[in-house]
Structures are given as structure tokens and as C-alpha cells.
Image 1 (cartoon, helix red, strand yellow):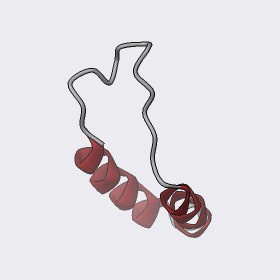
Image 2 (spheres, rainbow, N blue to C red; image 1 turned 120 degrees about the vertical axis):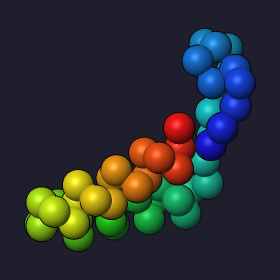
Image 3 (cartoon, one colour; image 1 turned 60 degrees about the vertical axis):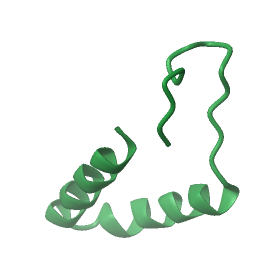
Image 4 (cartoon, helix red, strand yellow; image 1 turned 135 degrees about the vertical axis):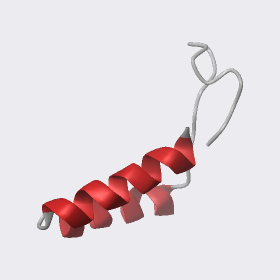
Length: 49
């Protein structure tokens, strides 16, 4: 998500429920292997910032 007001407290950041479930599932699978987890979360961070 990108928004110029993302750090503004009154602005509510929302993502679809399906994306939350996807992130939860990927956390389970990438937590097993340190390299895979680090690579995935680094990629995800670049997508969100």
C-alpha cells in the first residue's frame, strides 16, 4: 500500500482479508527456512515501501 498520509494517525490503512490470510500462510511456510524467509520478507518490504 502506498499513501502519502500513511503515517497520519486519522488515516486508516486497510488491506483485503485475503491478503492478511496469504501473509499468515506465507509466514508459516517461510519461517521454516531462514534464507527463504529473509528473501521473501525483504521482497515484501520493498513492495510496501
